[in-house]
Length: 526
Image 1: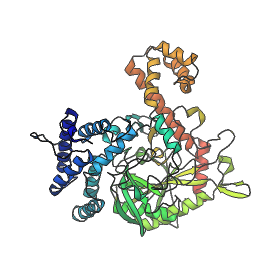
Image 2: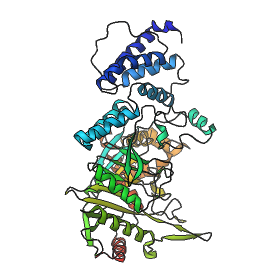
Image 3: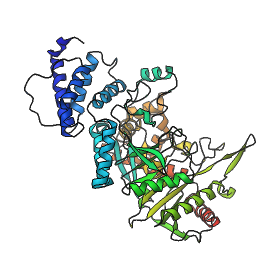
Image 4: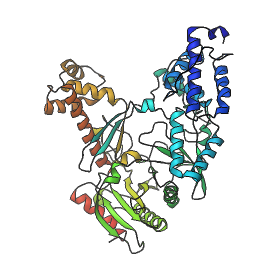
């Protein structure tokens, strides 16, 4: 890059942005005082400058790095550092810049464990979470765009979000990604080798990612935060090696081990079967964080005990899905009870309730029953384990899954119901932001749009057409805009509650709840 850019207005703005970022990194302890000159020189070299900003610089530190980052990324596009000015390419340069303004992984790890020893685990996670935000690994500017509301339901408040934090790829980038060979390195987005990785069109950059090594059940695992934080301190705990998810007794033991070390966090695992499982079944991992989910507030309906597991209480929870809650003071006894209950469910069938543990596929017994386990510390200091019963059978009527969002709900959500949504936090697709705004517009009197949905083939709202007709019949088209938005959000929240009921193995009917109790009693609980 020619040095005459140094004196051009854009070059001066970029040099000023470098000073802002170095000051930000120093102020937020991403770097130490001894690293300031080094970090500045790294950024100067990255952008082709041989000298720093020459004029007086006397600005207060920023609370976020985003403004100077945007200036530098714009400059990078102008000077050819990125080929296109899209979110994907901007993110590649964003992570590269912030990676130059961070401590090495070994230094971050040392600080985490030093804080743990001196001030406790909460202080360590507080600092690590702040580091993940300040380094722009967690994009709080995007998370802030998510739409959020609370939905009243028969089960208490359900948390509703429309996820806008994950950047969308352009059609050109999607086409380019399809032409690339299958990923070999890193094997997936959870692998430890992502730390410091530059990324590519079909894999996000991770120069500003840091992970903390830990042991669970005498095995090597890692701890990090999610870049899209769906809730407070949304963390991911993942296996040292790229090994597939499999729910076993060891899984439950790892979850209990985690909350012994991180008593201020919950942790849970997605189920390990297709349809009811999570999005990444190829790498064993858990999700946790510092958040009280609606499921945790749900009341117990029936309580049981089991003679083989003294000190453990077992309860059916009032929830749209089928939840058994175990509570005990001794994690070892709780583990034995939880595992025995899980193994009993794996083998349990009740055709009257549409529950079959296995089916014969070409002479092979295919399993259908599994659980979504969630573990946390209770208010009394004991241990609490929720086992959410899952079944992944399909049928002619429900080819996507009997206990899966049914087709009449697919215009709102058709994806798997994973751990986070099981707990009562809806993560709805970003497309709904504009679509629901448009539906609200129809209820507020946009007759031209209403007619376009009816008359135009392939209209963007076509998937909502029958729902729109239903809403218009019930609410009319004379609502004011604010009222229309609230009506639409409420109706979506009601639908999501029904989606969770679809995913529940035992329905919230007298017959369904009687079948649920049959299973508990078959386990030997009284």
